[in-house]
Length: 230
Length: 266
Image 1 (cartoon, rainbow over the protein chains, first blue to last red):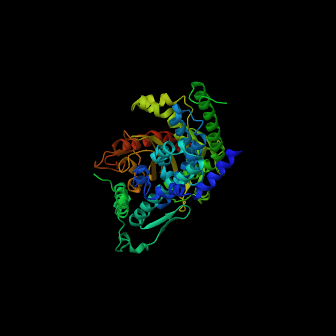
Image 2 (image 1 turned 90 degrees about the vertical axis):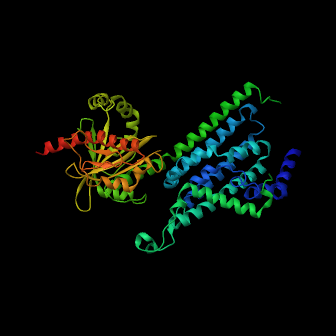
Image 3 (image 1 turned 120 degrees about the vertical axis):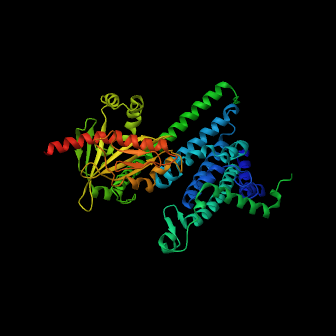
């Protein structure tokens, strides 16, 4: 009985405690998985051509991240040490397969565009990293918050990069379920005799890297603590 | 009660329990979503077939447009004999419907290895495939202008993985009305370009060469083309060759069917 109440009070405290707020907020800036830890870069570069893909990808990662962190955290006292990496892999892989199947059933077009990158969430270093570094040693509550924090840290970079790339590369913005909305009149485009031309470089992968680089630059100039000393 | 969670016995039991739980969960998910996924795949197939005859459809109207333009679905065997034909509404669950013939699966299961073993020898290929009991679907469409078109699915191998597409022939069974291609994992910017319109538009109006060595050729980049060939993709030589191979191999089967049809009409 006493342990139960103790857990309950810890949980109640934890949601408001400074330490747990840090779990949520830190990955957005100070320990951002993409710009500071430079993890999960491959998918961030590959699927940020359109906003709708980035939104779906972010939601998928959020789901896998929360599910993985909470499940591994619940099992943390039962998982044999020798096979813990395999157990983590199985948990993540199952969640990713579920996401993939759901996308194929409900968002077939976006699923086609994301193609292998949904499957590659399995190898996304952010997820395995958080499972190994956090969920294995912490209670489900904090692990849940840690998952949301890191997934959001991943998501906002993805969304920011994809908005920049889609606006300048395609002259449009797209959201899942709404399709692509072009906000420039067609007659403005050069092909229709106008003066505007989309920047094709924006659509190519190198520009994603450069955009991420610019975000890192802005972030470090604002947050001097991130700059390493030589 | 203390269990040594690092003992071998516990590790085995844990692994077995985990596999059972995960397997059940995944099997349940896959089964409960299968109907929707199959419907999506059928829509996509209809969109591709309609694309080959120049009708652009999306997922919302693919079914309606398919019913409007595709008047008959025929299944033929390797010798060009008609096996079945139907004009009823498409039922993706009906295995006897020519629409349900999975050409990609057939290719993977039996044609691919036979093509490789035959190494360009047509007689050997025909012999290897003769006992496989293969069926080939054909879609007869009528355009708004009343033109009869025949849409033929083709499947082959690119550099990294499968490539496939649809070729639409005109009434004379010689002129190509349109084509579209897709791929699984070809190199972006090189082989992957076969799905782009700049490549597929070159097929329009070209003719099959029924007397020559090859029905149709996709030539290596830059070579002069005639009415029986198109320019391949520079840097995508093996993918282009794959397109060439799948068109020649598949259309031959259908030409046997067309010939028997015209003989029957006389």
